[in-house]
Amino acid sequence: MNFEDLKGQSQSQLDDLFKHSPAGPIPEGDAAGEAVVCPGTFWSRIIARFVHALAWQGKVFTKNPDGPGATLVNKITVAGMHLIVARVYSTPSWIDGKQCIVLDYSKTSLFARKIRDEIRLVDPANKLYLGKVWWGKTRLVDFALKFPN
View 1: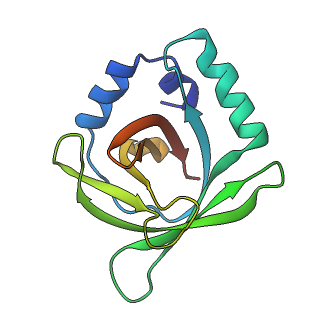
View 2 (view 1 turned 180 degrees about the horizontal axis):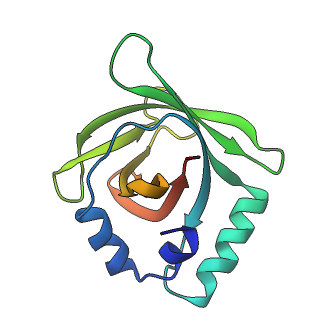
């Protein structure tokens, strides 16, 4: 499975994939990212290219040396600057109550403090995670993260 496969699915297919996937381990390293907006439509690929080129390219995860969890920084802008930090930990998903990995910006970013991302490992062989973005309690968009093998 890859980014294109995810962008080709409908929103309900992506939701089902998320619900039926394990949380997986908290990832580590530099992940390429793709926005998944208007999934299953012609616009999905165009929006993803635009977002990737101008706004967001992925995330870099660093495991906590003293215990569970991690921190991350987003790769933002054309230059891929490392900005907007989040705490990373496992907890129940707001979607189905099952374990997921949460990317929590509430205590680390004034700009993104209302953002909560939830990710699950949808393809272990390819280290591909599917994410859901929340603004407060409102779901916004999906995204995918691909870690190097």
